[in-house]
Image (cartoon, rainbow, N blue to C red):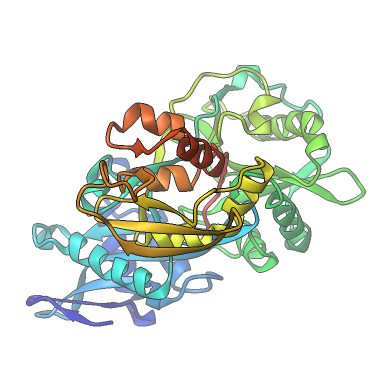
Length: 431
């Protein structure tokens, strides 16, 4: 892919870009933290992404090159990964390191980079693009707030029983990678949206990054002497507010959680109890995560959001066909018509049924007036679909907040309510 836009060429990244891209991103990211100096942690992250990351290649970067100088003026990176929803793997791209050098701002380079990214994803069948970034900005590029990535209470240092019950928790070693991958595989058997890692990715997380990489995390394992039974992933350093940030935690056996939560929290608190600047734990977990539920009461936190783009809504529903069919079977529901049409105000998805069972999902043109067309069963604003499909909001919640979410009858409401339940988000992205 090579796009000439006059003074700039949009092209894939190259291994030889490493110095230029590390310098560019270090100069434009987190400048409020560094006081305007280049951010060494950002530079190290870029270097790691271009050298040894298990799922990223130079081609995953997109670069806006200044044709006059041949140097990058702006760039982003698409971090390819697979998430899991009820046993179905979803191809996902997490967009990171979006930045433009000051002298080239105002030329719509971010918009052009995203257009190239979206074209690449749509052509390659990557159904979901996700980004966490500037509030509201990415809505203008076709994204919708559709996932909550935290909301669990923060735990003050004074509430942590430092040293209590954490003898069974230790820093992870690369030899733990196979066991950690097996735990992640077990976690996909539940209802949560997850981002499972294989053994190679766990080895990278444990020992593959440069020490200064901003995205480096520390991994600890719960080991009761019989083997690794769980893990805790936290920041490698305290935040500016003195918090240790917890990004993920998992147990192979849900019954282990009451004791595991005490052990993990005691370990995390004990690691930093002697540091005068340590104020507590910031749990980037959903409020119902077992680590939060079995831990001490904390300070309520407002959920933050990831923004999501779905380029092919019918394609996403078709990819989730086994999940939808299973949910309807579990609810004892059979659709009485040959099809159920969901209009997205411009395009539509036709869900086809045989003997009441979902058999296919096809993209069809939308109708002129979906609110009144008798062939339309549900009219869903495009921004609401990712919230439903990924389990961020239920049908009842979307009906309360989107006046133009319309259902033909109570039967349609019953079917879509069963199809789109609220789903816990237990995603630690592969960055």
